[in-house]
Length: 205
Image (tube, rainbow, N blue to C red; front, side, top):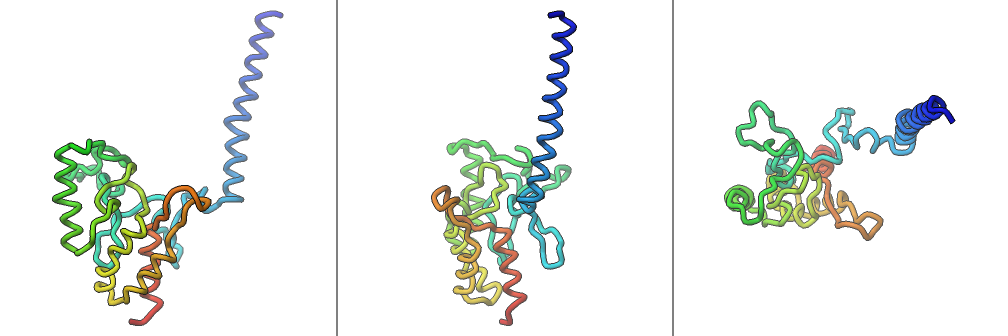
């Protein structure tokens, strides 16, 4: 068999595989995603009653007000910092990622003691692991139900609500284990705070 024929066959095979892998397969996956999983395929966007996008269920947001359930700490401030005005250097590790500081690193110990723990003590929130330590991505939208319940008294006082109302709200917004066995229950902080605002507007106190 001649070299020209072998080269022609190789070129045709490459072209066919390229069409299948780079054109047909992505198009099929995009179409399937839009039909079967449109919410997930479009970024799991969270919208308010007016249809305005408030964020994504996959990415946390920095909540620090007494009127809201606070998020877990983030080395990147959940990527909300302005790179041109990043005086605190929260984006020094990139828009996503941990600080990569060892447990014995003095800077990490200093931040935990004098920032994270101090801020929790100042507002009377019992410290939990996820309210003290950052996640690996610094974008984690979830906190544990224990961390959410630790904030009930502060929010109840700020909003004039009953503690039981907030307890019920947390239970309603707690995601269980995947397939009932994988992972741990978690509370999506963005969804929880959105539900908190809805509860206030729907009731008279």
